[in-house]
Every structure is written in C-alpha cells, then in structure tokens.
Length: 276
Ligand code: G3P
Ligand code: CA
Image: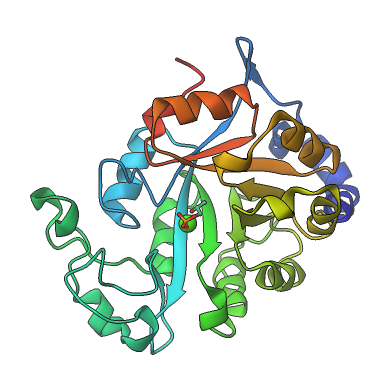
C-alpha cells in the first residue's frame, strides 16, 4: 500500500495526460464478470514444454496477458528459465541447475519429454526471454528458490534496469517468489516494479500476515485451494491485487473467475477467458 502511494504521487501528474493513464483507469468489466489477467503458467504448459520458447510463443498466440517464468542460475552465473532445482524431470540430463554450467544446461533437450514435435527445445536464458517478449506480453517473473543463488535479486534488477523495464507501467513486469525476504530485497532494489508473494499456506492469509505483506508487495498470489471471497476482499482492502494458481481444469478456472481474483495463473490459457 505504502509503495503504491509512493509511486502514485511521484508519477501521477506526468501520467495524467499520457497514454499510460489508461493503465490507471477503472478496471474494465466484461459482461457481468470482472476483467482478469490471464497468466500462462510457465507458458501454455498444458500444450507445450514448460519454460520454453515453444510454450511462451503459444501463450502469446492464445492471447494470454502474461507469461509466467521461473528464474534460476547456472554454475557460471547465467540466469536461466527452469522450474525444478534439478534438470531431471524436464530435460534429458541429470543434476542440480546450480551445479551445471550454462553450456551444459544449453546442450540439454528441454522439449522432447513433452512430445516429439518439441525435440531439441533448449532451456532459455532470462535475457533472451526479456528481449523476445517485452512489449508483446506481460512477464510474471518468479525467482525460484533464490536462497540457492545469492545475489540473484541484483542480477535480475540489472537485467530489467538496463532494458528500462524498471519503471512504473513501462511494460507489464511483476516479480514474485515464495521467498518473502527475497521479495523485500527486490522491492528495495526495484521500488517501482510490482512485487508478489506466493503461498499455499493458510497461515499467511490472516489479517496480520496480509498487513505485513502489503508493506512491500503489490500482489498476494495464493494457490486456489485457499482462496475465499473473504480473502479476496481482505487483500483488496489493503490495496493489493490477488493472482491465483494453478488452473488445470475448467472448474478451477470458473471458480477463480467467480472469486473475482485479479489474475489467474493457468496451464491452459483457454480455460480462463471471461470473453467466452
Ligand atoms: O505463479 C505461480 C506458480 O508458478 C507457483 O508455483 O511451483 O508452479 O512455480 P510453481
Ligand atoms: Ca512458477
């Protein structure tokens, strides 16, 4: 809340007559349903291999509002996109992400486990994904297990800043993590970039916990199993937005639309379309 006010007062006048002022307009509605951001979880993961260009391109084709990406780091310091902290499940290799050099990671096949048509799909770098998708689609950046990668917050901040992606509403960028200390630090490094906290723990939904999150976060992003109307109301009353995950069925998508969350993070962008 405090962060939002700080940004608001600093840029309000310059934005008043700019094209970006639309970003601050009242939330659009579609029919009786509130507009919701459709976030493709690790890309359009229901159809293509997660955290690859194939999945991100498909998400763009499917008109997702954001792609969600998981950022980790190679042994020699390159930021790469992969969900698990080992390469075993989603590639033809074995070992911990942080124990492999970028050359080793890049030589792996991160696509064929999902289907023959994806053979040879590589693990992308953070830099190339920023360059490929900035301005085309929003990017929800998750710092995955940042406690394993000391200084990763500074590296991410540098990559965004050198592309001028650290300014409010410049392009749609959000940074989130399950690691709250990492998000506090990121908020200090990038005070104008929206921050999200991830949890599936009900203990994090108390008024006290939400109040603490609101001192540095703009988004409270819970798993859908702990979402209630009351939680959505409480998050909104503190000036935060709420994005929930992971939709893998039409019923889960419909539930979150009914809960009127602000973003739905889904493996299937087609399950979350309030325009239908
Ligand atoms: O964006 C929410 C979601 O990605 C958090 O869980 O495990 O899929 O990274 P996980
Ligand atoms: Ca994620």
